[in-house]
Amino acid sequence: MPNKQLTTRQEVEDFVRGCTFYATGGGGLPENGIESLMSELEAGRMVGWVDVSEIPDDALTVCPFLMGSIAPHNEATISEMKGFGMTNGVNSEKERLMKAIQELEIYTGKKFSVVVPIELAGANTPGPMAAGSALGMVTVDGDYTSRAIPEIVQITPNYYGKDCLPITSVDEWGNVCIIKETTSLRIAERIGKMISAAAYGLAGQAGIVLTGKELKEVVIPGTLTECYELGRFIREAHAVGKNVVDEIAKMLGGWVIAKGEITVKDDSDKIGYYWGYVTITGEHEYTDNQYKFWFKNENHVVWKNDKPYVMSPDIISTVDLETGEPIPNPKIKVGQKVALIGMKCKPVLRCKECYEVLTPQYFGFDIPYVPIEEVMEKAKIFK
Image (cartoon, rainbow, N blue to C red; front, side, top):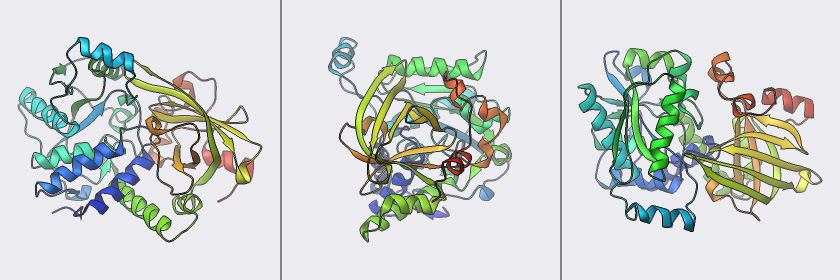
């Protein structure tokens, strides 16, 4: 039995809301995640998670995930897709994840019983959970990043030297591929993104087959419970008229980085990633300041008045200024009133292996990583 079972739409929405916050702008659209989980509840199946301690050491775990760009399609892209006959997808996000798991079972000759989310995200956590539920599998209360990330190299199994291949892939149109061997995990990421880019969207993929014993060595435990509790907190704080943004920061032990209006958004779709810059003109106590953040699917660098400020692997989330609802990057629009909330990443991400792949220098910026708590102390901003 799950340690936590989601039984109502409100509980599903609370959970997905929290996942979306930790997704830091990426990880798919929350409405798709809600749809995936609700389809399981409506089918009468159990949706929830179990504590990692309840996973047998000899169980076989699998990590299904959505791979690709979350960028909206423009008219030129839609026209191009029509030329390939890609007008009506044949499967949902949940269904392509299910198929990817099944294809991996066929290829490896193994039967999996446990799903492990690769990250925390509005679609890329509930989608794998729903796929596992539909296949009679349980989901562990934990994940491999404790946030969302743009590349598979940024997961704890890679930091600990676990084998992540083979990886199976099923896109929206039913095309099936297997990434059997690669010269590096970064190349596996590149090939996976190329596969998803060929399909103009998110492919369902599955890999990182570990025993329960190996899982316990690398999983970040308790993160699904944290998502649910945060999502519920945001809803309840808004319902009673609290200053939700400040309350979120306080609840998380984090900081409000900025409040203001989105005045510029410059975005593009590049080889399976959603890239861009967003400018926030400060308001309220942040007046006379300008903030800009850069995203590659997720938010990774914030500048304050053109000077580097907060950066990944620490959490940088955009939320609605009034409701506290987290806003995925595809949903960001000029004119929105928003806040940026920052918090320390999990201790496991404060490691050499993570710094090599999830700090500004990895993304091509000549900016040394400075932990958010040091930045905030220097700025004398305490929440």
